[in-house]
Length: 417
Image 1 (cartoon, rainbow, N blue to C red):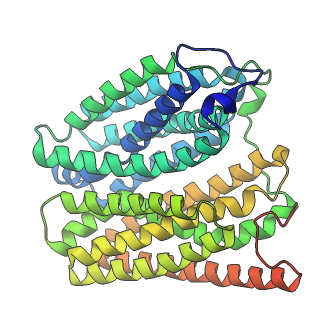
Image 2 (image 1 turned 60 degrees about the horizontal axis):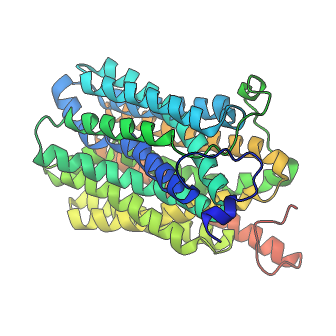
């Protein structure tokens, strides 16, 4: 079934100048651009530190503020496009993103970076909610998979693209944001040519009230996946903030390529893993995720402690498989346990946990790096991720054994329905 067929008959369809297939591609590229912009500053953090002499805790605060602003926006305005329409919300988000890119381009101290990252978090929160919904509106199956793969691919493109510009082009702290501004301006024009797939519902103001609720049938599952989910998001936070600095310190390299390559290795292998395990049972995705997180993190720490660049890259790829599999398994383990009317509150709780795990441990690591050696902090951070993954693995095995004892041969992710 193609996207036109998937979209036919929806009563809220209002035609634009682009076909649903073309709109699917436009929204996919826009989502990738947002995630590329989110990781674009990562290779630049060391340059900002060298130029403005701020501490690791400021660096992680810059990253953490983005995650917290994104989370707050998702909680408050995540459902707004259901009422006002996908196109207007995506358009407003693009205007905010253009302003954030302009602030990055004009930044001359870390206060500007803090403000730019906060505004970028708001823009990305608005955009990802509306774009994710629009992709599913246009094609349920392709839209869901595209949403996840575009996220991983966009992060990798942002890290590698910025790295290449830093090494090969002039004005490394400015050019990437000028190019991103041009890309978002083009997306703004194309967005208004896409068909509207939602909107017109009353209750926009009421939708701004955050709704977080974990239904009884999903509480045990959410608790069981928490260690693996926290490990996954904490790993992502470390890579997008402190990993380039750790790579530079342990390998004694002045090139930004290594930091960008490690981030790309994590996210690209995560995307490949998601594609490969997309039809697997949630239990197996979580099992693969936990095991690969443990193995990958162990290899990463070996590479960091011995200054071995190839080992770091291999560890990043292995951990990336755990990153992607663990994330997909966590989502699929809970999303089908509740009725559709309960799903928004459950996913809000899930993303609160996820983005707090993405930001708070990283900020703590930046604080500790002021008092301890960064490598020592990385060892403790990596050890905590390994411990969380092992704990999650044990919990999942216990749940699997319990379900088998109750007569369920395979965990399906629907045992609460």
